[in-house]
Amino acid sequence: MSTQKLSMKFAVLFSSAAILFCALSLSRSVSAQGPSGPVAQPPYVLSVFATSTTAYSQPDSIVQWRDRILVGFSNGVAKDGSDGKSSTIVEYSLSGKVKRTFNVPGHNDGLRLVGENDLWCLQNEDANPNLAVIDLESGRQKNYTFAPTVHGGGYDDMRVKDGKVLITASNPNLNGAGVNVFPALVIASLHGNMVDVEPILSAEANATDIPTGATLTLNLTDPDSLAIDPRGNVLLDDQGDGQLIFIRHPFSDNPVVGRLNLTLGGVATTVDDTDFAPASNSFMLVADIGNPATGDGGTVYRIDSPTFGFEPGTAYSASDTAGFVGTLNLDTGAITTIVTGLNSGRGVLFVVPDADDDRRQEDR
Image 1 (tube, rainbow, N blue to C red):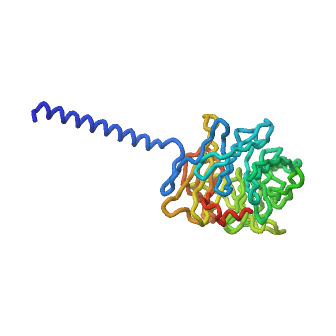
Image 2 (image 1 turned 90 degrees about the horizontal axis):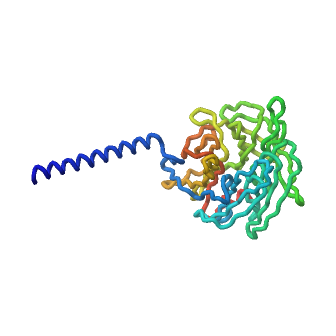
Image 3 (image 1 turned 30 degrees about the vertical axis):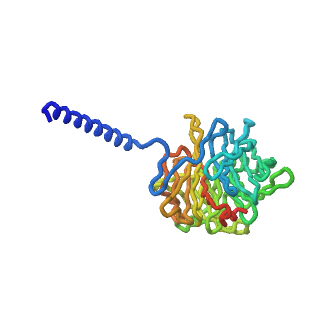
């Protein structure tokens, strides 16, 4: 090989190495800055289940009906329904394909399957609440109204326990001392075209602080979402106050109430929704409401734990303010993140692909 050709070869190799070095440096720089969008920590895997469209946006509550997933999109409707607009309930296959859509009047926040086929859609959590019940077999819809609320706000989320529908009394009026003197949790029942409510838990109930065992008096200023833990306790998210309330024997005259303050890295935090991993094979869905200011209408993400699956009974919560999904320590209230970078985490649901799984009987 001639000296000239050898020199040219070394020049090309040097140039290629320089380009590779620059590319690697740029890659490290981008990684250090952090990728855009949410990121899952191993062994968890994050993917997109469904996205908003020009017809519906801002996903929130998620429920499963047989082999279908139903997601409530609030569409930016006023939380008191004062703008007269409607939300959209979208029915998906387990793979995220749109099957049907339903319009409900007002700002949808709560969804719950009551009985085999009735989907209860609760609107307007800030004031002027209403309820739409959709028969998922036929697609027929009936709308119900509430009497004026004693607490001045609306109703937010629902759960079914022992055949009774529990709903949270949200956005309450506080007295001059900043105390909610009204019911935080009620039982709802249908009579004619009305929803009747019966209070069962005061916002000022006595409780036990779970980590310390100390007795205290609650002041639930922001009753929000509901869940049922593996022991059958009702779990109420007092969202704005950054605490979860556990209620054992909620229909008795003397329910046992526990309070758990929430922290992330030792700092107080808030969550919007919590669900518990079932014993069966499952995957998790979480709604990210998006950021309307940037034109982001929101996304429903799927989270998998492919190696050994989710540990049964483990609590997972999504944060509306800090944009994470994390595991929740039920003894201390400490949260460990598994997904970060959400705009605002909302509804959480473990999906059991087997439609006959016993887990879905707990809400019937």
